[in-house]
Length: 282
Ligand SMILES: O=P(O)(O)O[C@@H]1C[C@H](O)[C@@H](CO)O1
Ligand SMILES: Nc1nc2[nH]cnc2c(=O)[nH]1
Image (cartoon, rainbow, N blue to C red; front, side, top):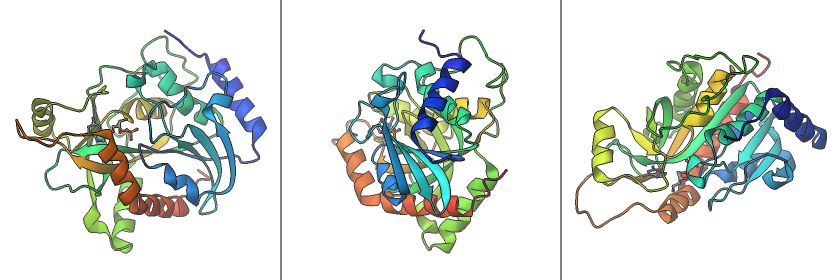
């Protein structure tokens, strides 16, 4: 297993900070097709992942693979324009690396976004889901291995992973901005991927209370909570999962990216507005 010590990650964080003027307090991970949020960042300083020794490289279309530093609504932020996934062959520990690097760069609050398939039949393509909890069906966990207490405890709780105040704020901003009907709250589940779910898998997770399904986010959130970050998560519903046997339609990544292209505008506006109202001096 490839592992990174606290000192290795501190070195990576220091190297990155030596290349930029920005000192971010907030990190944002952009999901499939959601990287356009980077266009709203001002005073941008960009570092491609392949210029950061040890950093995993995004291999999936729709994930540019760049760290974007700058200001969003006057807040110093760093965006991961594109993430990496376990199904790309990266170990969960490698997936954890960018989040721990953010922690050691001084980031206290992490926003995670993703593209997800709608399990909840009331969700439409293009809707958004504020994540209230997750179900880890991936079979992987980035905290497996020796625990370094400088990151966090051996047995971290995960029952309040998604900050309740930020969830409430997101829902009330959506109302204020006039698109409350597009924003739901719900449970996200992570499958390992890269295949999309079978009909039976979708039916099973629906019974379990899952509202949207994807292939990411959970390892990042586990690592972020382990090291004491405040977490806010949001899914863009890019497709409705197939719940009937022998249906002609099938899920595909092109549809995911197309919906991102068409519908990520509201997601970007909502995230920017939440960021604008955050008190990051905590
Ligand atoms: O990075 P996210 O979770 O947004 O990407 C989702 C899951 C797969 O990587 C891909 C499937 O289309 O979109
Ligand atoms: N697992 C999974 N990931 C997705 N990402 C976007 N849509 C989907 C989906 O339907 N299933």
